[in-house]
Image 1 (tube, rainbow, N blue to C red):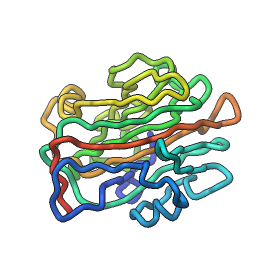
Image 2: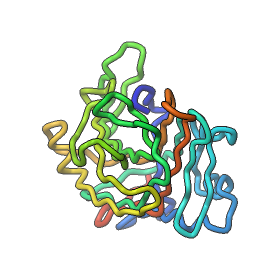
Image 3: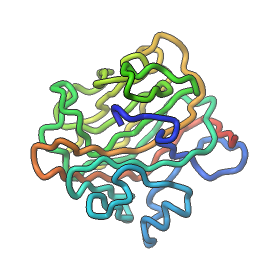
Image 4: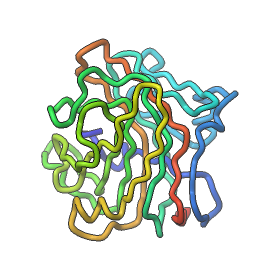
Length: 233
């Protein structure tokens, strides 16, 4: 995700609700008792990169949420294109990590993660910093990590003009945490202006170029936007 964002591959994870609704949320516990892949398809998700390769990626619905696993080196995306959010400020995510990629650290240039939440802002395409990499809308990427400093907005290998990555918590393996993150404030800090409407959100893991067998395991229970208005385009 750090280097291949395009309009065709932006991760969208918006909710099937009426044409306009307040406090949009998606609860992955609703998938429990169903086939994960069918449940995702029924909700309108598409599986990108390695997400549909069951030799590399596994989705398991549980009472606690959707478990997302890398079975070997892989990068997987869930995508749904639909609508946008206004009047938002915080995103609230309940999630956890069962196994982190070995030695993952953005501070040390090892940009792997067991789970990453992306928020994309507006529709303006911002320079990626490379003639070979598609441009992208502004984005913030939140992750759970083991070692990096919490709350520090970091640049990745590309997208210096329009993207920032931040570790938001250091959960112990198997621990569920709830992240409440002020997207509006972080956007101002990162880019020096007010955030436009939120046009996309999403989830990803990346265990490529690993220091072990490239495995990871994470779980997401719920993503919500208190006080936001969802508008179906």
